[in-house]
Length: 201
Image (cartoon, rainbow, N blue to C red):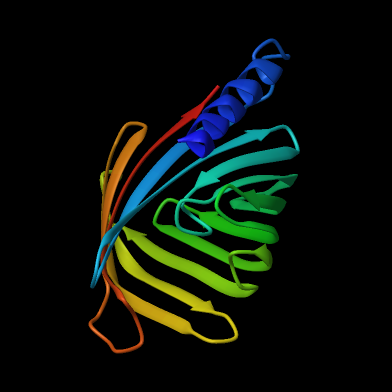
């Protein structure tokens, strides 16, 4: 519970820091969540991202490690249809560590591409690890996207690799997405259900 309160306070702090700034710039706030349905449990994760001018900040819960909190910040760049976030962060709560998590996104009228490698240095209650999340969507319409997703995790003693199709339904600033992982001995995950909200102002 304490970690959840810290995450909530971080979001309020970021909002207050930028609320009174010059409105001529376009800022983006996104709030997202998923449930990972594994072979033994359902694990939730939440994260919120704020892009302001050339700075991006992000808070995560359960995303980098089960029930762990992560706070990130770093430069944010845009080049035509490409977005780049070079985020470094700290992990705390039931684990402690440092993380580097660059993110690359491409969005056109018909295609969406997401690429996020991540390296975590574990200090306590978690191993150092490398992970990767990749998505490719084709937009059949503004409301319906479909594609494939790949997720990879490895540390010194274990690894998990998942791959499968996905579909996303969007309405205005909201989306809901379903990911189905092809059954394999290489992954504990069976499916994902994700929801999100994004607002530009």
